[in-house]
Image 1 (spheres, rainbow, N blue to C red):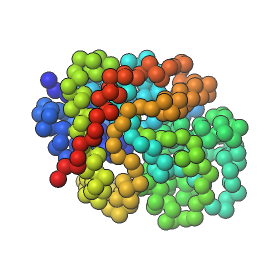
Image 2 (cartoon, helix red, strand yellow):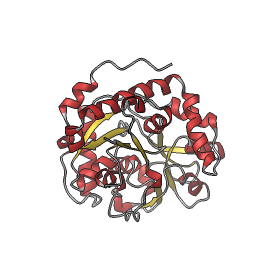
Image 3 (cartoon, rainbow, N blue to C red):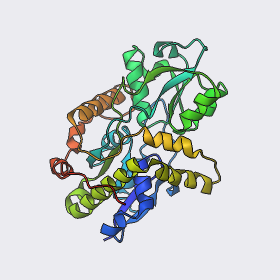
Image 4 (tube, one colour):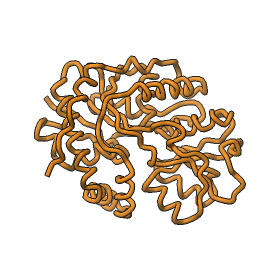
Length: 315
């Protein structure tokens, strides 16, 4: 049986696993599906909807069986009646990014963003961080002008004045920090835990448990290697960017990987509470079409497998 695993650079763990050859030892017929090569649907209206490409391809004949993303896409999947199962989460990625503005521009707090243009990679964890930050400041989605940017590319728009604020992520945020003084409006740690999340279809989890366990085991082994070899892991990302005609800083990528948690653990009650709060808020603000219950995506037997000791790093 061919098992299809979706990957892209934004999920660092799966991107490195794609290049390490570890999973192929257990699943010789694994097929790696590059999300960037799949047809992209029109972007969702940033004011009224969330994009759903990640979850939709789990249920597409040309898509994949397993994927890892940030915080928000699985909520979108559940809101679109996709029968997904949460597989596991990373530790908190609290150093991954934050909501920033240029220092000295008169925007001192989130409350000052009323009527301002704020850049986010819409549908990613950045949408959730911004919503949580607005809620704490007594503002709603309609009080700002959200602008859909790439996860890393919004920095240029902040620098040229097209954006008033931006949810930046490393390593792209590092280049903006070097170009101009920034003021942090809200960090990630004070808002939510922001882990990576891996999920699959319920039918795949039930009918192909050995394959799912092989993916989990390979991810844990590869993540242990990343933690021990962040510079070597960073080289995979730099090489990919250069091969696509871009430029990348190896030191910046190494620093970004060093600041992120690696390892795959079971979903926690804290995480599920955060997910439920985000889902309720997304629905209340008109970005999610229906109310959902995130605990419907939990399979306790997967958590039991994940409590086994993690393997030692590969040589």
